[in-house]
Structures are given as C-alpha cells and as structure tokens.
Length: 259
Image (tube, rainbow, N blue to C red):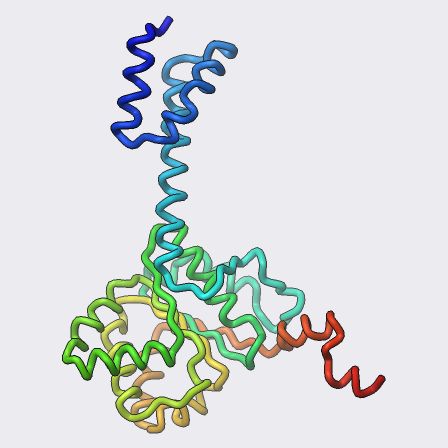
C-alpha cells in the first residue's frame, strides 16, 4: 500500500515536473492497477504514454497555429470523387513526405475553386504531424513583406527566416501580377531554397503563362527552372467546389435564369 505521504509527494512532484497529464490521471490508473492487478511497469507505461501523447498534441497545436493557415484542412476531408482528374496515388505518395526529405517541390495547378489550397494545406498538415516547421503565405502578402524588408535593408534577415521552414507554402500565384522588384525578390527566395528545402505552390496559370505573372520571360524561366528541377506537378481540371456549394443552395445563376 502507498502511504499518504508518498501519495501526496508523488502528486506534488508530478506538478513540479509539469507532468500534468500523469498527475491528472494518476488516481484512475492506481484504481485500475488494483482492479486488474497490473504491475508497476505496466502502470508506468500507461502513465508515460498518456503524458507523451498529450505533449505531442500540444506541440502539434502550437506548430499548426504558427503555420499561418487561413483554414485547417486534411486529406480525409478532400472529395476526390468530385475531382477525378487528380491521381490519388500521387497525393498519397506526397503524403509520405519523401519529397521533403529529398528537398523537392510540389505545384498544384488549376482554375479557382478546384481544391489546390485544400491539398496544399492538407499536405502541410502531414508535415506538421511529422514534426516539421511549416509556413503558409499568400503570394501577394509574401511579396509585400519582401519589399518591405528590402526597403528597410533587412532582406537578408527576412530570406534567412523564410529558409528556416522545412516546408513553405506559397498560395495563389498568378491572381495578381508581380512588378519587377517583386519578381526579383521572389527569384531570390526560390534560389535560396533551391535544392535545400521544399516549397509547395498553387497557381491558376499554366507554366506557359508565368511570364505574364512575373512580367519578364527571362526571370520567369529562371524561377521555373529551379522550381521544376525536382518537382511534382498536380494539374487539376475539375469543377469549382464553391460553385458546387452554391448550386446546392439554389444560387446557380444559370439555373435561376432557366426557371
């Protein structure tokens, strides 16, 4: 039998060591041990396992909040049946994160609303679960921050910060054109990460149109050369999920016109 002194000291020491989960479930596990005649090793294993799981979940939540995701998305939530053009095996392969260990890139291409951002965030979520530091940004926001850093003579520091992320997600390339300064700064970032770190990008423009995004054939070619050297491209040719949802609630303009 455990003495009252030892019992109280155990609870207090667990609190001091910040083993809060173990402290919270200790009594239940002691009762369980008595009922099932569990060994000391078995009960310690259960307690430590629960503490570890709680701490890992806390770390994951912190990394997720720090990632900058506009929304949280998982692969399980993605409707592959609605987008049959996507090779599900290719997505499953990407979720092994082998591309990250090889410092390769991923680019999702397709019209608005087809799930590019969803898949990018879902992929990043898998990276977070594996303990990687991830950062998400819209392309336009990224360029504005790089420009500000350039203006304040802190560009080197900003690029260094962006290169600490094992996975960088740059969303919505092509919705707004880059000016010359923005294109040059983007090139510098991609060059810094090239063959060292993985970048996931989404765009509504085919690669043949990227010269219009960056306003220069030469710099567009240089950026694509580095991005595509080791890269998986997922080209989505389906319909918009947002249009699908609008149709569900009767907001399809074409249908309303027909009625």
